[in-house]
Amino acid sequence: MSLPRIASHAEWLAARKALLAKEKGLTRQRDALNTERRNLPMVEVEKDYVFDGPKGEVRLVDMFEGRPQLIIYHFMFDPEWEDGCPSCTAGTDELSAGFLEHLHTRDTSYAMVSRAPLAKLERWKARKGWDLPWYSSFGTDFNYDFGVTIDEKAGAGQYNYRTKAELEAMGSKFFDADQPFEMPGRSCFLQVDARVFHTYSQYARGLESTGGSYYFLDLTALGRQEEWEEPKGRSESARSATPDFAS
Image (cartoon, rainbow, N blue to C red; front, side, top):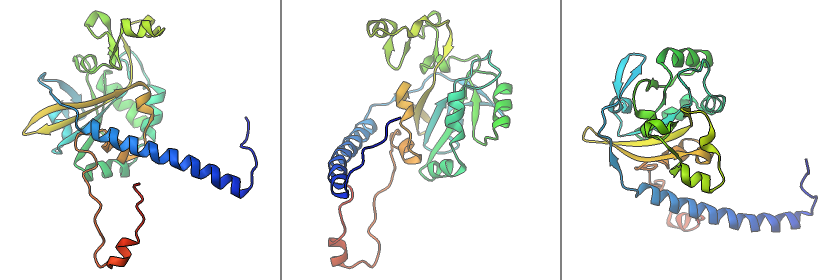
């Protein structure tokens, strides 16, 4: 493994400032992208999916737990497997009670859904010591409809918004694997007057770009739902001297 070259402080500072300009440019692009994502149209979920949960059958609207927004992680767990996907498991290990609490303060619920039967999910959840909602979509079309169970015979013949033909044109052998097979994903939903709408889904490398609860909130239709407030009692001179950290 190669190490960074050794430089003087002046050289380092010049290089750091040049990189900072690029970082700020990327931050502005990300902010613009987040705005565009929030402005995506939404589609009503009309199919009545019924899932298995620890307390019995639940529907998609129940997963909101009374909040207007819901983020679902499509955890890879094939019905034939005894263990959950190692990569999905590693990502879930990083979630904390504080993460869920921060989402809840922004009226956003979080849950996981897998195609494996509930007994297997509960066993894996207990083994990992997780305390978060996890539901089984076994026997339903949910995983197929949301693009995470790939099965051409069942009409689920695309992943990450690309068809088999498009992927093959890119030189990918994605569909050569034995079907059906599971893939990861993340989907966002909005509840309005007891109606559920699908607002966003992401797959593949898009799932890797995580950065705490704010990142997850940026995926939702309502975003972070906060505006910066001026602290009370600050003088006009103090306000005018405040740097523009967002620029």
